[in-house]
Length: 145
Ligand code: RB5
View 1 (cartoon, rainbow, N blue to C red):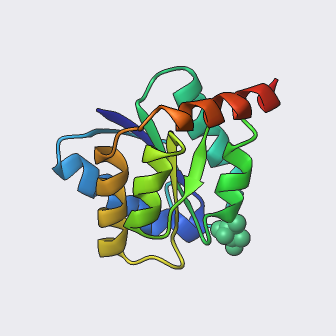
View 2 (view 1 turned 90 degrees about the horizontal axis):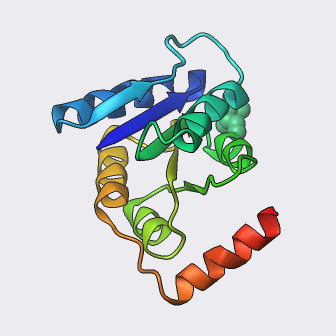
């Protein structure tokens, strides 16, 4: 599995933690930055991770800003991107099972490292259920057109 990860300054510390956590599990990580705690603009990094997914370079994306809101809003402007803000594992479970989300968004200012690890684990280990949920995804794709 290969994952593209990005954050702004408010998500930098948690991004570094999650990156190391993923690598410790043998998952390949493309780190799209930011690379320091200096202030930056989150849309830049949401765009980089969204494009990695659009180009099929990676299986999933992870984005982290202070609240997760700016990253979610930005990433969802990109075609075929379904970014879900998940503040705890149950949200990650349904983001995959029902929404087939391909980017996990987390909140660096609201989540601790252990909660983030559990949220990542749940997101990566849960499959899309399809069925009636696929019909709803198809309705979203119609709106995208
Ligand atoms: C940065 O201060 C903060 O606005 C950003 O990380 C994010 O929370 C925006 O949605």
